[in-house]
Amino acid sequence: MAKTGDTVRYLNAVGGGVITRIEGQMAYVDDQGFETPVLLKDLVVVAQAGQKPSSKIFDQSVYDAGRKAAKPLEKEVKPAEPKPAPVLETKHGDRLNIALAFEPSNVKNLATATFTAVLVNDSNYYLSFAFLTRSAEAHAWTLGFEGTLAPNEGIDLGTYTHETLTDVERIAVQAIAFKKGKDFELKDPINIVRKLNLTKFYKLHCFRPGLYFDTPVLEIPLVNQDVPWHD
Image (cartoon, rainbow, N blue to C red):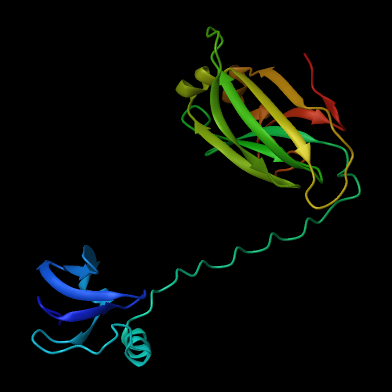
């Protein structure tokens, strides 16, 4: 360990001098009249205090030995990002078909059931979308969910009770459709607004297996064959 009075040279740079003082892990080196603060671990002793140093502070063999002994900095290795799976396109998928479905937790007891909203993208396009909600009395919208939905997939947007369904009596879906890594037909931006009939959430006959679900759901079309739904 270097101490005050030792002649040292810098481990990772040319130069050195005599240690004038040490404070913690920091040494102060008199380098040609200038006091230079250097970490102790970055110094190599070439002559102890009271000994006559070599005529030159920098010695290549000492420098190489010091660098070999020093622990190299560990580089952070980031794992390679997995490549996205190729999109399996369908014959009808170049036309946009988008639906919103509400799936009950217990279709046999709708009065106490919760309802999970699912957005379905039945197309060969990615959808960058926002799901917006508001109550019938409100004048401003709330962002319920935003993200990117892969082709031919669905995504859960949230779960609601009968009490919280009143906060989402009006829903809106805004989206832009695109493909990755290939040319595609440009689609118009999507902006669909619908009002939910909350009485249907109490009626068993309103829940049935749909185009995209084997279990009973309340299915609400948003886009059919590129044509947005309108009141």
